[in-house]
Image (cartoon, rainbow, N blue to C red; front, side, top):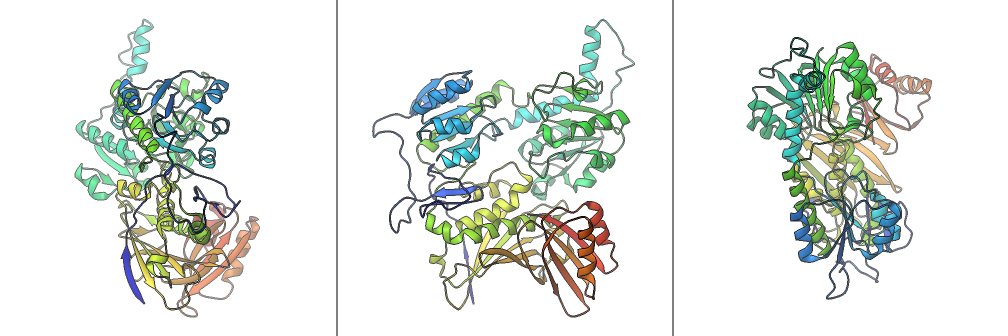
Length: 600
């Protein structure tokens, strides 16, 4: 066998996109959110760049919400610009058929009807800001429309607002202001707390979190942070210690939230996590409202576990005027003002204008949130391996624990094909997607995979092992290793010290075939329970019985062992998520040494 190292070269962007979960024709194919359409024509293996309009025609950009003058000037240099604000859905649907690009903020819903009404002319939607909840991404992809956002320009503004809320909360500024305006003078009632010497936990150490940490250090605070992707050296450079989630919430006097809203972070602060916090903790949220269970926060405020909260974002915006949280005497609120500075608004305008113009020119867009075109024949052959690649990434990152962060990922492809006959770009992108997306708001695809990994300090290398035999199947196996991290499941650590998972495709279905040094064989459908145990009779029955009592269906079960009666790893595929109590009962079986539940 021979091994060779390769790198990923991403082609120029073509905003001709497609999305579906089935093959509708030989020229169209979709995998997860990486869904693309190839150029028609026998044997075509080229990437097509779509030109907009005629040879001399300028494209038309519809700006549906107010945009800074600097951004408008950039657009006007390249395109005809139509600034039409406060359009009704019907008016937007009517106008869109005459436009090549659309720019919105958060107030305009870009629904499926918008893309259908465009008649295929709309090539790019620019969201002037970070969140894209108001854009139907699936419909955009199906209709060949690229979606880009502006994720960096409002960083400082959001950080400053977080610090403003932190200080205002600590010194009861809002309550004292309202009291004086009501004709009262209650100096003793509004005694605050000092920030100097207090511990601030920054939850999410990306751009905004980093800037908040810098400013908090300047106020004399001790700053810790939790973020599984933050490089420890970057944190140390500004005097911040990376810690685990539980350590962060248990030791903090103040908690500032800066994580995205994902399935993993939804209601991350809840009754259980509030119960682990120091009594009298104070919480600031300028991230996303959904990361806090708002009813649980009210209970924590009433009980005194949380002394105060300062909130700029809410699960539903605007919140109800009768909201117990909004009306709580120990809560100060602002109407989602994180990015609302003159400077930030101009910066966002320039960033989104540059992204939209670049996309209309057919250039690579690092802020694209859906995928470019790839030959359909490549995707068709790689379909089950693409699914395998993403799931291996998701499994591997869920095994990571500790505060050091994911920095080094190695992907090994074993194949009988020569390197020129095996296009791994999609596989690499999907592994990156699986590793980064579970705790990130970034949509990873072939366009932004390398950019996103680099931005988060994650170095992904590829190695190919050339096998003897028939090259009929594109791959024999894919192995993902994460180096220099601790694992919540010690058996996932290989002999050389990395978290290691490996998989194969069997009869078109992705399978997990190795965890650490243990061979297993379990279909990657549903979710997986991994148990390390002493190999002895009756273990399968004991575990199956506990799951059966909770009506959790077991789809596959496999045991890999070192030798009879020695250590073994049981991999169990389940259709449903077991309760914490059931997992605890399995962990309490005397022969079970460790257990972990992994979502796919």
